[in-house]
Structures are given as C-alpha cells and as structure tokens.
Length: 246
Length: 84
Length: 230
Image 1: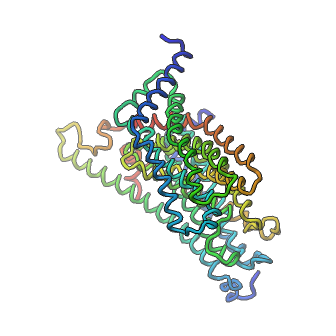
Image 2: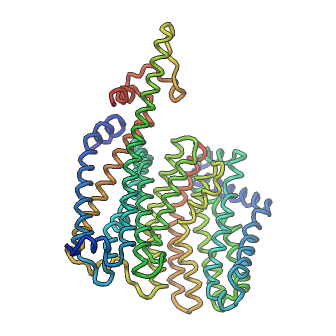
C-alpha cells in the first residue's frame, strides 16, 4: 500500500500506468453510453404520468450523481495532496473541477427542461435543482480560487482547503434545502418518482450511470496526463516523449 | 420498441423539444469536452517539442558554451538525468 | 518562559484586547455594515411595494438576507489591515496555536458586527411591518446566526486576504456556505410568526454554530498560512 503511494509521487509512473488504463475506460464508456442511450430512448417504456419527457432521466440522474461524486473525489484528492504532498493528487483535483461543473450544468439544464412539460415552468425552486445550483457555485468558487493565486502551489492548497470545507457543507446544504422545500411546498412530488420505476426503466438508467462514470474516469486520466505534461515540461522524459509522438 | 415508427420516435409523443434539447445539449457538451481534452494534449506536446528543438538548435550553434539557453521555467535544470 | 496554559490565555486575551481597541478606533468599519443593513432594507419597499401586508409576509427573509449581506461586507476588515501592515505574519510566528488566536479575532469581529446587526434588526423589522411576537426571535436568531456567519466567512476572508481583487471572490466562496444558516435563521422567524417550531430552528442554528466552532478555526488557520506563505 505504501509502495503504491510512493509510486504515486512520481508523475512519470502515473503517466505510464494511466496510458494503459485509459483505453479500457474509453471503450467501457462508449459501449455503456451507446447501449444505455438506445435502450433509454427507444426501448424503455414511457412514464404513465410524464410520457416521453421521462426519458430525460437517463441524462439528468447520471449527471447529477457525477456532479456530486466528482466534488467528493476532488475534496479527497485535495486532502491527499495536503497531507501526503502528492503532486499527482493535486493534478487530478485540478482537472476534475471543470468536468464536475459541466456535469452540474447538465443536471441543471436537463432538470429545468424536464420541468417545462411536468410543471409548466422553466425553473422550479425544488430541492434538487436548488441544491444543484448551489453546487455549481461551489465548483465555480474552487476553480476561481485556484486560478486567483500567482503561485500554483498556493492556489492548489487554497483550492484543497475550500474543496474540503465545501464537501463538509454539501450534506448540510442538501438537508437544509430539502427541509426548506418541504416546508414551503406541501405537494412533495419528486421529478424522478423513483418509487414508481420498473426494472425496464431503471436498468438503462444504471447502464447510463455506469457509462457516465466510465467517461469521467477516462477523461480524468487523459486530462491528468496532459496536466503532467504541462507541469513537468522541462523534464527529460517529457521531452523525449514529445519527440517520439507524431 | 417503445415507438412504432421513426417519426414517432423523433416526435417523442409531443415532448420532442424537451427530450432532444436535454439529450442534445448533454451529448454536445460531452463531445466538446472530449475534443477539448485531445486538443489540449496535442498543444502541450507541440509546445514541448518546439521548445526542445529550439534549445537543441541553440546548443548546437554554440558548441563552446557549456550551458544552453533555457526557458525561465526551470533555470536550475541543465542536463536532466533524474526521471521522476 | 510562561507555562503553555498561561501562555495561551495571555495570548488570547492580548489578541482580544488588541482587536477590540483597533476596531473601536475604526468607527467607520463598525458602523458601515449597520448603515448598509438599513439602506438595503429601505430599498425593498421602494423596489417591490410599500404595501404593509406584502412586506410583512416577506419581512423575515428580507431582514435575514440583508443582515447576511451586511455581515459578508464586513468580512474584509477581519484580516486585511493586519495583512497589510505585517501583523498577521507575526501572528503566524507566535508559539500559540493559530487556530485559537484566529478564533479570538473572529469573536471580536462578531461582537462588533454580528451582534449589533442582531440588535438593530428589530428596528428595521418595524419598518417592514414584521408581525408581533417575532421580534425577540429575530434578534436571537441573528445573534446565533451571525456568529456562524463570522466563523464561516473568516475562512473565506483568510483564503482571499492576499489576493488583489479578493472581495468579489470572497462573496462567491462564502455565500453558498451561508445558505443553511439563512434557511434556519429566517425559518425561525417565520416559525415565530406562525407560533410553532421556534425551538427546533434555534436548536439547529445552535448546532450549526457548534459545528462551525469546532471546525472553522482549523480551516481559518490553514487558510491564513496559505495566504501568507504563498
């Protein structure tokens, strides 16, 4: 275990090993997303109440799950960076943030669009959308803070602290917003209506969730490798690598 | 199949705008993200390549100088032997 | 050399005294948030409607949001002047734990901004036709709430104190974290108007404060170190 952690200290090692892992996750992502898309759009039954707009669930829920998972991963990476001073952990945290923000946006957009045929309005202050919006601000804060420092190391440490503070707050915010919403909206009907889903509705959902997660891992590996290139640009192994490509 | 014809599939029972907007934006965003990541990688490799070539050229042009001109990124590093 | 216990209390008392003295000298900084609070409250009837019934129905939220923004505004004065004249660096070099000293500074900040806001709020409540029976809860919820806001805000202030345009970034960082306090603070006042559930809201505000007291000092200390050593 400690040998593994020590290996992680070497960006070069991580670069090499992620080169082998990356294709696996890209293939997995492509397959899962393809199967999930076809199944969810064309074969899964429409919802009794919501009709075909229900199919938005197949992008909304995976994006929402990812949005939250990525923030947690980002905070954990930040912690690893602060405690064990592993540069790769910070690189991973750096590249995960924009993807997390993008997923949050997808969740918000798809959720809002879904609300039009369901509630008749383009925006609804329900617990889930409100929490997602706050999460988006948290992401933007981490990204902005990291970039505001002239020293990369200071920016990394500040972003790590903020990510950790944010991750502690996320459950508190969720609980508060849930409570606030049920207090002000007596008709608590969740847009996803999870209880009512049959097997042939949630099987494609599971596949899409797995597909989105594979996409996230594959992309993170790819962008971390680029981040390694960026930060280690003056090392010999990077120069030799650049010469070999193309 | 939940739809009996292709036209029905595109129409999504009247909810076409919503379903295709949500799915379309999602797909587009994910494609853009992948494209951007690949572009980023290509650019970085090019930058490193160019810089290496420039420094090699400078080193070859001045054989008597022990120290080649380096980018300010890391002036302490001359001939990098460690590979971590 | 002082025994560690004695050393810590001495240092905390010294920090409290110094910060109190300095802040009291800068009356403007103490009064600014209060004037801002009053001004913002004045804007709402003008911008929305002077109808007392309408105002009464949204008064708890308006009062809480305005107080929250005033508290946010005051965060800049927490560390900036000490950062500028180098005394923050001295604080880092002190042998006493930075978390404790930072907590002392935040305590002074709350005493001179949060508490006054809480005490002034009932007056502004009158202007918004806040229903009777909720004034005490308004002040109490704000007193409890602004303590948490000072603690949470201090983390953001510590992270941004060294940055050129840190003020704008500070709002982005801190406001999402303020939302739970806002929900239960305004909720407490609403509960007081409808006559039920006050204790539960105040208890949760207290719990949030307890959590902030336990965790924030460490985050503040870590953030101060980053800003100064960066």
